[in-house]
Image (spheres, one colour):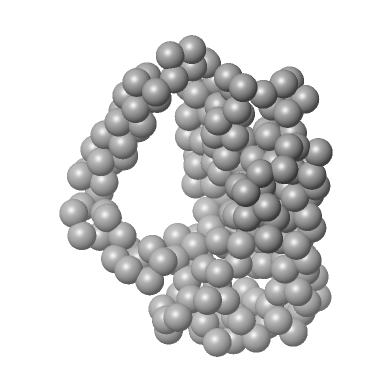
Length: 212
């Protein structure tokens, strides 16, 4: 019912209106792309929309799954976030770039999308700013900090903290177990991969701003 510190759309307007608004936004996005991209590869757009939906279904199917794996989690975030970022980067350079530059843009978008989702999931737990259980955990979605901890010797402690909805202890267990540091390292590594994709591209103000 809460997203990023505020009430979610469905909490305010109801689930039916939330679904209708989602349909409207998808339609609006396609309408804008039709106006802006005369030679747009719509097949790729529809493919990514399908991939995002499939990833959300996979996430839903693994609700409250204490055996959730890192591999499955990465499949989910690649499908629902990284593929969208990669597509946006490819479409952004579709008309003016070489095939090599397009390939680098796609790779950048993929890594940037993964890093973005890793950071978003990290902040959902560690920058929660509330005594309420983080929304991912309230929805039964175990993200990388939790998954990493569940796979180690602190499994019983993190399960207990989640069941008791003790936000402070969840953070303490994840920090003490090394899961927090591990996820931060993954974020840094993914960000570095994304930046490496930009280095061969022409120097521009936009490129410099991203790297900085």
